Length: 251
Ligand code: 13P
Image (cartoon, rainbow, N blue to C red; front, side, top):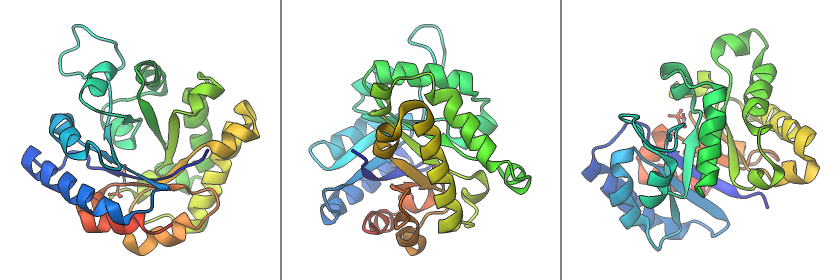
């Protein structure tokens, strides 16, 4: 079944004590959020263990922001999927545009990362989305199709139950420039069709597709009202517990 999800991506923000305080505030307010809305917080690696303690027993799930494309061994600085599970993660974000843009994350690497994440029992939030140049050149459909197909088509319908897609137009991330509800909806519906083309309408209908890019309390309601937008992947506004919860109350 498709879920409503609001996931906070903290990116490279907060020290460990600040992150623990933020997580505590989110957990405290999470009781205001209806049970059919899933709350997830994705924190830097250093924060996972202490934040896992904070969210334990609450309605808030823990996510990493990335994971390694190797199982284990001599890969200095990397963190493997089974380590994330042992730290208390239920999810990991993969393929965020900042990783694609600044850290050379390719679709081929993302296939490996997704495979290892799923094999270790993690659920995956896979990010796709075009940049400004691609949008202006009218290539946004093609880019989203390629990014979605290149990774997801390597997996099975059964695997799709553990994958969430996040559509994040790069030009809307951290810019204050949100995609309009219509712009977001048209891509979400399109991505759902790309999923349907391979896995069938049932799997596509059950797929949760989140919107990300300057989503905030003032625009979340309009975005979430769209038939193919099942929630949000929130950056800046997830760093304030009040805003994050307000967004989760926008369905
Ligand atoms: P902002 O909400 O800060 O635009 O970030 C979106 C994002 O990249 C979430 O992954």
